[in-house]
Length: 531
Ligand code: AHR
Image (tube, rainbow, N blue to C red; front, side):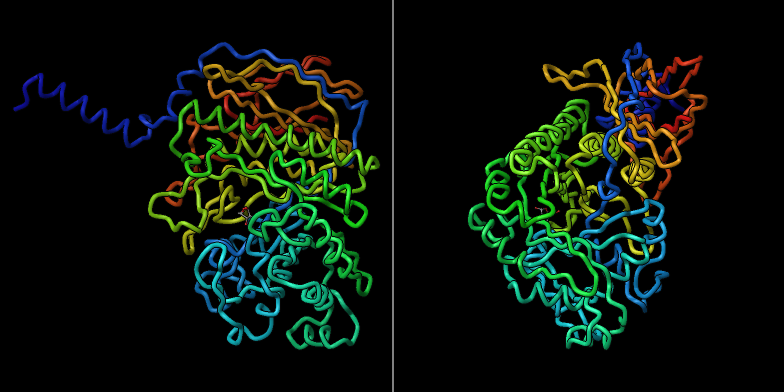
């Protein structure tokens, strides 16, 4: 028999247990309470009468490096795999990616690009050399090479962006790679491509001369790289009607001197200059912070750091404006996203991390920034597509889950190729301790059919926002939309529970005449179509 005391004790112990296993004792629980707070009040003017530049579809680009389980397992399983595949590429992942309308795909790296020799990855697969992946560990079988990558791009309907090797390659190797892929002549290399199974040349519209040449790509000084860039770029040729846009290695974060030197010495030889910026919850590479265990402080710090993307884009753009006032050279943010500590038990070099509602909010903020800077930002490639860093998709052998970031890309694809519509947003501050960020982020566009698309992110995990919205230059008759949110900040999809966080239909609006009031839930990403 239990004494009353015993019952009380065991009840509280089991309650504690229920709370613990349901995640309620995790740091991310606090905000469920905060949702009862008074909504933040904000105003938004959507300026349809002041249409801006076209949002380059490539802002919604992706990046796939030979790293961890991205290429091998995430995309490529081989023709003999029990995992359903088409010519070796897994059907489930390809089908999910097709839904995103991936416009452009960067490959084979990253740091790996400067150690990759393209001839290793062509011809019969059983004859291809096995090489150490010196950047990320393990041995690369080279089963996935040029033909497999370009086949993937065709399946996805994505334009290929190939990153050439400067660090350990030569201009000749780079030049011959482009000839192999794009020449329709009867040259020896074009014939070799035919022998290897591809008759028609491919179109390769984007080619980069090295990667992070200030770091893993060769530890170069900007002056030295500027000269190397000019030399290599000279040998990027256009064959058989293919037109290659030449991309130079750009800066990272606030390394403005690099942009200054590259633009002053080589701008006229390039079509684009890259920028890399990763969001760490801390700014400390030795202790970045956990992907899933975090509280309000880490949430706030992560969003504050991701918002710095705007400052970097504006300051690098200002330097580019001095040398290229016509904005001919695109700023290509070809690596961005969150980067967390390695999960316990995971391989050091695999860069596998879970993805939560926080990542969705990070994605929404960055995509809003890119949209709003569409005059200079011509491409952005989130790092990376599958199983690495801020991935769209996670796989575990035959299983696959779609991450919260995947859903943000799906909600935002409407902006691809649409015309930017400026927004004036007056939002309250979201504060933790002394640190403060705007509670809301937004961008808008108008597509070719005249539909207006409005994307709004509520950064505040504790308060919803009531936004008094006015659309100047258009009459709105109907509103539809989707919202991505969850009760916990660290809500995620797992292989056991793959549907914990998904977009649902958005009903939080009131349209009375020309007055539109939006009620945006705390910690959410909202996508609206206004007609
Ligand atoms: O995306 C992972 C790595 O981050 C890339 O290989 C490199 O370019 C960057 O430092």
